[in-house]
Length: 371
Image (cartoon, rainbow, N blue to C red; front, side):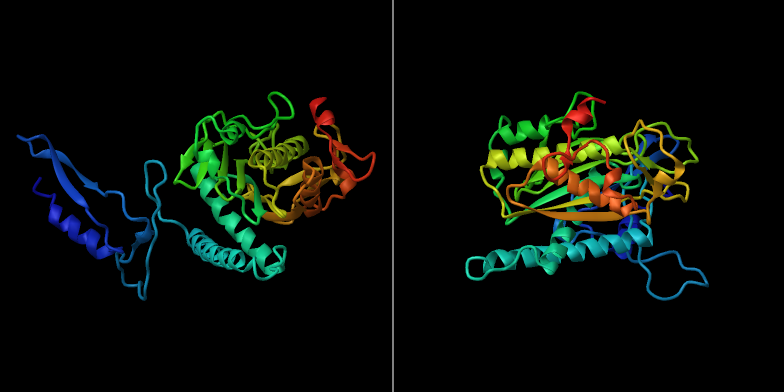
C-alpha cells in the first residue's frame, strides 16, 4: 500500500494524456490488510465521442530522444499495445477522407433539386469509396480481423435510401434478410453469420461471427460484408504454413453473387431503386510469409498448369464498379469478379461458373450448386 500513490497516478494520467480524461477513478483494493498486499485499479468511464481519440503526449526520455513525440494505444484483448505508425497514418487518412465524404454528400444532396450533379463523377466516386472504406474498416475491427487477411464487399446506393424501417421491429423483413441472407446452396460460401443483426449506434444493424464474418446494413442503404481471406473462407482449402494464400474461385464467385442477391433483395423490401449503386471489393493484408496471394484459372477442382496460376501485383486491392438502378445481380457479380481476375492478370475466359449463352455473361448459380 505504501508504494501505491493514487494521487500520483491521477496526476500522471492528467499530464500524459490529451485531451483530459474525465472522471478517472484510482483505487487501492487490499487483499490481506495485515500484510499490506493488494492491487490497484484505474477506472476510466465511457468518454464523449467528441473527445476521442486520446493520445499519449509524453514518453520516457533518454539522451537520444528529442523533438515532439506522441503515441496512440488501442485495446486488443487483454493488452493495449501502441498502434504502429502505419496504422496511425491510416486512421488519420480514413478519418480525413470520411469527413470529406460527409461534407460532399451533404452538399450533393443539397444541390440535387436545383442542379444536376453527376453522382458518377470522378470526385464523387472517390468520396463514395472513402466513405465505404472508413465504414468497412470499423466493421473489420468489430469482427476481430484487423490483423488478419481480410475480404470486404460493399455497396452504396446513390442517392442514399431510407432504410430506417429496419429499426421499427425485430420482425422487419430487412432484419430477416440480414439474419438469413439469400444463399446459392446449403453449406456454401454465403454471408450468414448465425448472429442476430443488432442495432448499432442507431445507424445500422450489425451481425458478427467473431474472427470469421460480419454483415452490416446502414440507414442510408449501404451494405457491408466482411470475411476472412485465408484458408477458412476466401482462400478455402488445404495450405502448408509456408505457402502463400491461393484464393478459391468458388468462394470468391459464390460470395459475390450472394452479396448482390442480398443487395437487390433489400432494395426490393424498401420498394425504392437508387439511380446507381457503387460497389467495392477490398482485399486487405493478403501477403503471407512475404508472398503475394495467388488466383488460378478455371474451377477450384480442376488441375491447371503453373502458368495458369497468377500472383497478385500487390498485397492489397480496392476494386470498384458502378451499376444502374435496376441491375441484374448475376451480371453484377460477374463484373465484380472480372475486376479481381483482371487484377491478378487473368483474362475473363479464366473465370469459371459463368453462363456465357444468350447475351452478356453472368454468374451461374446452377453451376455453383452442382459442385
